[in-house]
Image 1: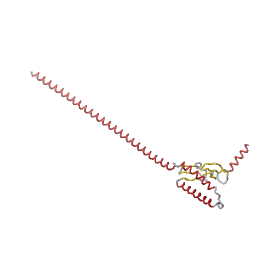
Image 2 (image 1 turned 180 degrees about the vertical axis):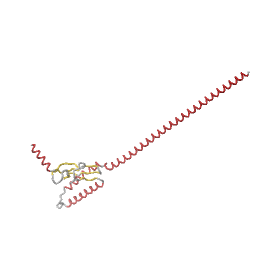
Image 3 (image 1 turned 90 degrees about the horizontal axis):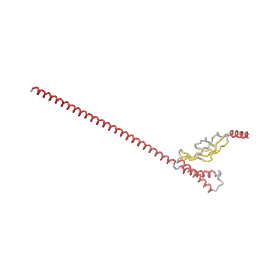
Image 4 (image 1 turned 60 degrees about the horizontal axis):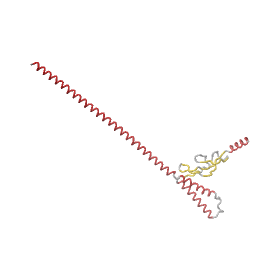
Length: 215
């Protein structure tokens, strides 16, 4: 009888130990699950933060590009407006200076001695001379300048050579005659000056001698 009780007691203790082991394993599994859940939550939070940072970076980049494009457009618009103010009427100016050329040619054809001319004609010439001077002054006021390079070195940027004049009085390449004045609007050429440039007489003589030898 005593042996049965001891055996029963031992079995109960073994069962209790087994139950404790099972409970410990269950608690360990629960703790492991909690750790895994926390790890997953932390990983998700880290991914979300990274995505948000990338989105913020992209938005900042787009904003900076948009601001840069807007600034470039503003500067380009200002430049185009200034360009239009300066040069939009260049075609009109080109046509206008041709009329001024005709007026100046008419005044240049007037004889130096006006004493033999009738009084009304004298007054007309005086009036035309005043008009011509006022036109030139108005041109200069609006940054339209005449190019009259008599005595200057030939410059292909502003002059157009029409003929050569053999002479010893000027260095070769000097403008010795102006057939038509040129005009400059601000820094843009409206029309080049039509000029004749000097040339050494020696060059002409050498050329003629070579021609004679060939013949």
